[in-house]
Image 1: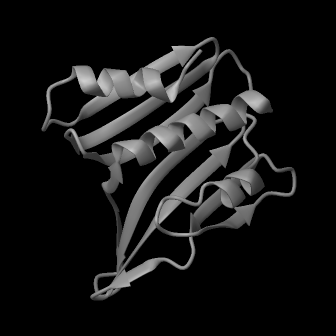
Image 2: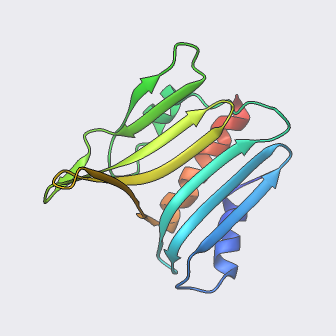
Length: 155
């Protein structure tokens, strides 16, 4: 079974101060974490993805994610939800605003395509949106992975 501990062990075995990608598979569930950098205290996460293979759907309840993932430093809110509950977008609410830049977490939950988490930044003066790495402690990353895998397994 995929566990956050398994992914964190892979991080600990790699060289400090480098980015990279860590992935794990258990049955039809695939988890991928793309890192810009990491060290013994924390990491810069570019993207977290979870997908099901073999035509299975990823069963992840957006309301549960919104309610229970409270430790990212910003509250989350569902901003888009299809009637069939097959796709949802969850973002930081309110987003962080600094010096004309708005930054926020964005989670996309799509039963067919999977789950992704990124941090986005929107520069109001340039009208440009871009991905930026999110700074997490190792504990926060481990908790997030553990919770998401648990939510999927329970459904």
